[in-house]
Amino acid sequence: MTLTRPTPGVSDSGGPVRRTGAGRAVVVLVLVALGALIPLLGPSTALYGTGEAGAPGAGGVALLRTVLFAALCVPVGELFVNRLARSVPGPETAPGHAPAVPRGWSPFAAVAGFVAALALASVVATGNRVPGGLSDLDIGGLYTSRDGTLALLEVNAFLVAGLCAVSSRPARQLWPLAAVVVAEALRAHPPTEQSPLTGSGLTLVHLTCAALWAGGLLHALRTLRLWHGRTDEGAGAALLGLYARVAAVLLAAITATGVWSSLRRMPPGTILEQLTATAYGRALLAKVLLVAAVAGLALWARSRLRRAADPLSACAPARAEVVALGLVVAVSGLLTALPVPIRW
Image (cartoon, rainbow, N blue to C red; front, side):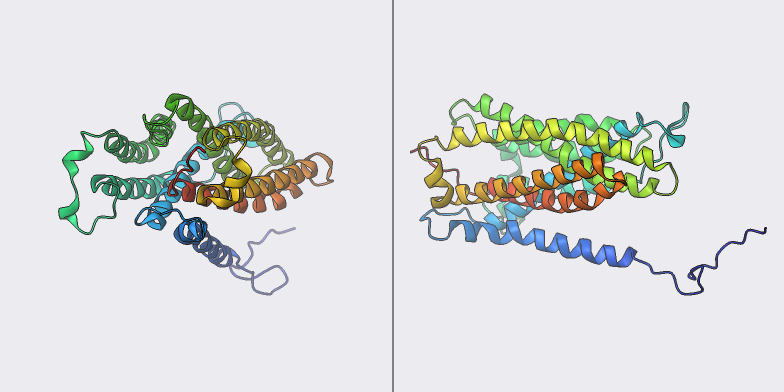
């Protein structure tokens, strides 16, 4: 029997091959555009009827913070899943051979994170106001204030992470990415806050686990798509199973730190009222509902992974989970731009 190579653009039956790459790109662009509306329009929506005053340019700041969080999730998830992939048995992970992994998005994420961090630093340089021009920027003031120092740290960290991502040792970007997480944890809890170190510690764990969860699932699905048809299906199911076991621990840590952080800012006696009467509470409630939906999708995917005849059918709810996690990231960016509720 003679093997022939199929004609490009023609299926075995003689008809054209359906190309879905462009369709997927359109869907992704639409989802990104819809996700951007959450931080852009969220502040005015959340503040409506609360009597609270929002900061100038809150929508823009929320969008920049969302981009920064997403730029952090992508490389962290790639490092995490690539490490898991090396422990999956299969032809692609034979001794002496590295597992096949998709081309990383880390360099692009670093560029996006750098631009977002630079724009946020310009806001800090004008006294947390939207700059009207270069003359409004007090660059020297960034070096003399705590917020300015943290903003510059994030700018430099994303720059170094990008250089590491395109180097021969991309794993080194772990250290500048860790610096971004530490800077965000410290920024979110100024010294004037009660027990700021406790709050920073909670945010540090919360943000790290969230980046591993969201970025890890995205890269895991990209890896499974690459492995489809190139390795045994058991290798893909094994990778998804490894991720699912770690994700269960990450969800527990995210829930515990999130509840603790919320109770620190909204005492138990007032939390129910503030969830609907304050902008921060409304956004927090939306985030809680989204995380609950994500947890439900994760359980659905885990059930399919264990019980379905085809374990990789778990990819369907996992893709929906990625979309929901993207919305969680957008709401998290929105939360950083809203006024923190007063402890009643």
